[in-house]
Structure formats: structure tokens, C-alpha cells
Length: 610
Image (cartoon, rainbow, N blue to C red; front, top):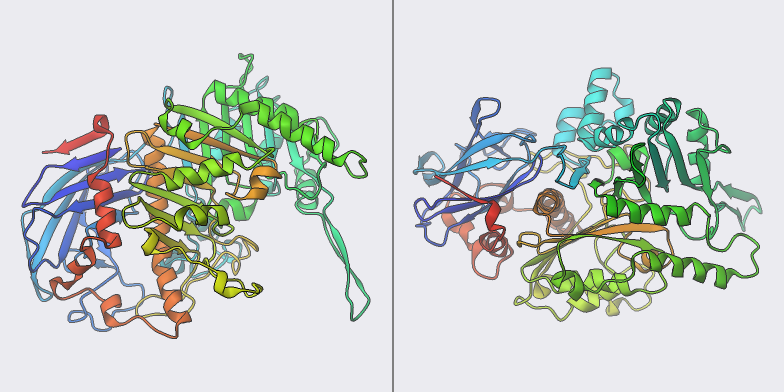
């Protein structure tokens, strides 16, 4: 939901509320900001009848010259020095009154001015028809001060206290695990579940499917079982090292351990095209009373511990029979294990036939068709016969009027970079959330050929990183690899983009496919293009903000470290003067972010607080 306050003292507050994240921006163009030291933010929780000033990290050095580790301070004494701010501590379906007090004076004698009031209500976790979309993100920030403070950077399975261990798992997964289990558990005898999964070895979740089978649900799962193991010979020792097929072996072991017959009617093994990944993660629901499926679960979440608790992931629950039927048509095709089998003599023809059949399910869409077309849901499946849909996704990023956001687990695609290289400050602002920093690889023969997108192109990137060395009051963090949750993608595993998310007709692209050639033209993948659903767009937007802000700070720290530098006091402490306002001059990133909220559309959901 989107909100706007009445003007007070020249300030207007804007907000976008997701489930438990609320993103704010303050329009200060009509205010007297001379001597402004920031804002004290007071939150009244009308649902739970609580009232308090929000907490923050940064302090005035004159007041706290040597702050203790992990100290949190009241914004009443140490104000927020930003016109863009997020509350990551909200709760779903709660009503809040936020009071933003402009603060002047000096650090040891602060003067609060009359506040600006904004009333906000967060979204429900589980909606009801006619709403079609529910969206669930895990925490995705195991590398955080909060995890270090609450769980001492321990892997959850190493926490001896069972209650604290459960709290750690719950904190990491948020509502993602609960929502997935709810999706499975509501299926009754005679209902059907048709699934398609890449990694399927988190036994707690697999057991939910076994329970569904036992209560009479018709469960049929297509599971990646490709023989991609390898034998490699060590040139020095001559010894052979064998690598097991992944995720085949892990999937089959989990199924067997949970009592599901891996050779029985419930399991279809996906074995064809062994060098390409059966990368889907979706589950179709068809009630006994219906001749067609009615709902589908999709997103980026593998059924693994790392998928649920580690790297960033999203689960997207869609209640739309037409969309579910598209998925069932695709599922029916995959159930035949299409494409070339091992030893085939007609590999090219069999694979081409498979891709052509996939294309025929939903066809290609251009960015222009999506932007000018009606609101709704468009499923897109892979592998495809060509790169047209990948070009469409990149065009949606490039042609945004105000802003675009994209998560990239495997770097910035060359075609996307080419589209954005000629962009200037006159173009929309682009935010990228990367797994790793975009930089020349050590194996590149011509490192001078590497070109970086940056503020010159109106592109701003954050990448997965963590505080490895204690800094000021920030303690050392861990990451999902050190915790044993993820070994490959440790931070950013989501695959979504947002085209003008704050417009009146936002576009979301989300699903299992990384924005790459192999994901589009070779792997089994699914994506949905959702246009015009403000609830879904607001949840995705606030969650992107949460992740981007978290990792942007850590990216900057890591960049400084790589340059042999350390943050100075101006970066670690609050500014005792109004010099921080310089960061909001026209052309600066922070000013651009404020303008995004000022230009926010969706008038039917824009509420003025009085």
C-alpha cells in the first residue's frame, strides 16, 4: 500500500508498505533545512498499543566517542540523517502512526520541531480472492549484525539450546517456509499436486509431501535426476576422483529417507539433456472439485536448507486458474522427459522439437507489448528456441520511465550492459543487486576491455558481502558458506526485476530463471510477468530496498578495504552539522531516490494522513 502525508513545516512524507518492511521518503523541497540534524522517528503501533522512538545504529561522536559493540540508540537522541529511510521491524497487517520530528540544535542540546504524521498499514501475509498474489521472502541476510547479536554467528544446527535454534531457523526463513508448507498442507484427499523441482533434498519439506500422499492427495513430482557426475584423473597421482550426480543423488536419498518410492507413481525422473539443468521450482494445485488446476507456487526457492534459510529467495503463490493451466500444460510436456536422451542419434532434432513445443505454450512478448498491454499475468517457460525473452527483460530494465530494479545471481549479462552503457542521468535510475561485484575476471586476457556500469549511466549496484573484520561498533559477521547452508550462491539467489515499481502499472518479472542465455535457451525454467498488481509490486519493492540497503553498505566497506582504506569518522558517525544535506543535492543518488517517491503513482491507494 502507498501513502502520503499532509504537508507540515514544508515536509511531506511518502511511504510504501510491504509485509514487514516500510520504505519512506521525505520531500524537503518546501522546508527550512538550515541547521537540520535529521529526524527523530516515533512509531505508534495501534494494533499492539505500543509507543516508542525507533532505534538506529549511528551516533554523534561528541556524545558517544567510543560506542559499545552492537549498540542501538534512540533516534530521539541520535536522529536519522536521511530523507530516505526504511523500517525493517514492522509486522504484517499492523496499523502504525509514524511521527517524523525535524531535529535542530546541536548533538548535546537537540531541539525537536513539530512532527509530520503519516498513518500506515502493512499488508496481510495471506490474502484472499480476488487478490491473486501472495509473496514471501526469506531473510536472506545471515551476514548481519542482527544474526551476530541474536545467534552469535553460529550455524543453526550448532546452536545447542533447542529454543534458540528454532528461533534462528524462524528468523532466517521468515514466513517463506510456513507459506510453502501451508500451500502443501491444505491439499486434501482427492486433490492433486503437480510439482517440478531442481533441488529437492530438504527432508523436513519432503516429509510434507509424504504426509500429503498418505492422506490421499494425488502427488506427482518431476525431479531433476540427471546423470551429470564426473570422473576426473589427477595428473600427478593418476588417481581417479568421482563426483556424484547433483542434485540427483541428494534428491533420491531425501525421497527414500522420507518413505517415498523413488521408482513409484509419485516420482517422474527428469533425465534427458543431462548437461542442462532442470531448474524449475514450482508446484501446481488442483482441487478435487475442479477439472483444471487453480493455483501455482513458483519463485526462486529450491527445496534445500540453503534455499529456505540461507541465500535470498522468494516464494510466489498465485491464485489464478488461467496461469495454473499454462503451468500444467508445461508440466505435462516435462512429464514426458522431453529432449535428447543419452546415446541419442538425433540430439539436435529432439532438442529443437522440445524447445519449439515450449515456445508454443505461451509465445514471446516484446517489452513494448507488455508496457502497452493490459494488466495481468503472462507465464514464460524455457528452454526456448531463441533469446527474444531475455531481450525483452533487458528492454524492460532499460526503458523504465522512473526506475528499475534487478537481482543478478551470476553477474551482469553482456547484452544488458550494452543496453545501459549509453544511459546518462537523464535516463531512469537502475538498481542492481548482485551476488558478486561486477569486475574483470582474473582469467580475462584483456582486462582493459572490461567496462563498469556506474552512476555515470544512472546505474547503482550492491553486491553480496559481509563485515569480516570488526569495525567501530559493528561486529564481525558470518556468511551462509561459513554456516554450511550454501556452497555456491551465498547471498543473492532471487531472479526478479521490477519495471517502474512505483508507477500505477508496475511490471514484475519473477521465477526460477537467472537473466542469462543458458536460463532462457537451455535450462528448464519458468517465469511470470505480472503487470498492474500494486500489492505484489509494493512487496517486491520494499524487499528489494531491504536487501539493497543491507548489502550496499557492506559493498562500500569492502570496496574501501580493497583500496587499502578504512572508513573515516564522517562515515561512521552522525554529522554534528547540516553538512549531510550535501548528499541530497540534485544529481545525487539519495536525491534521485526521494524523487522516485514524489513521482509515485497509484492514486486510488494514495492516502493522505490528517
